[in-house]
Image (cartoon, rainbow, N blue to C red; front, side, top):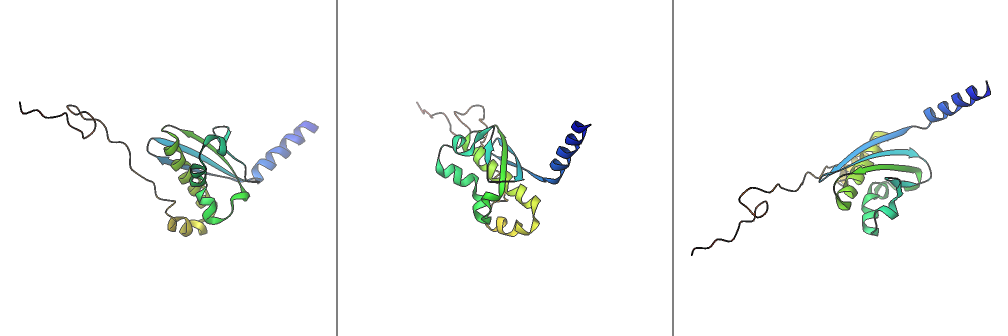
Amino acid sequence: MATATAKTATKEKAVQQKIYRGTGRRKSAVASVILKEGTGKRTINGRDFKDYFHSDVQNMVANLPFSVLGNADKWDVIVNATGGGIAGQMGAVRLGIARALVEQSAEIKPALRHANLLTRDARVVERKKYGRKKARKHFQFSKR
C-alpha cells in the first residue's frame, strides 16, 4: 500500500510542475523545446548547450530570449533538435524557446516581438534546376 501512495505522490508532483512547449523551425532544422521551472539547466539532444554549440556566439544566440527577459536562471530547457546543421538548429532553438515563453506568459510577447524573436525566418535553400550547375548558375557559354 505504501508504494501506491508513493506513486500517487509522484504523479501529483508531476502535475504541479507545469511544462511549456514550443516548436521552432529554421532552414531544414526543427527544434522541439520543453521549458520547466528550475535552476537554469539547458540540454539539447541529451548534451549541454555549451557542448552542443561550440561557439559562444551560437550559445548566446540560442539563449537570446532569456537575455531579453532576464530570467535565464528560472527555467530548465530540454531540446530535441533534428535536421539541418548547427546554424539552422541554433535558430530553431531560439524560436522554440521564445514560443514556449509566450505560452507561459502572454504579457512578454511584445518584448519578444520587439526583439524580432517570434518571427520565423522563412529562407530555405533553393533547389537545383536541370540544365544548370546549381540553382541559378549556368554552364559557361561558348560562342565558338
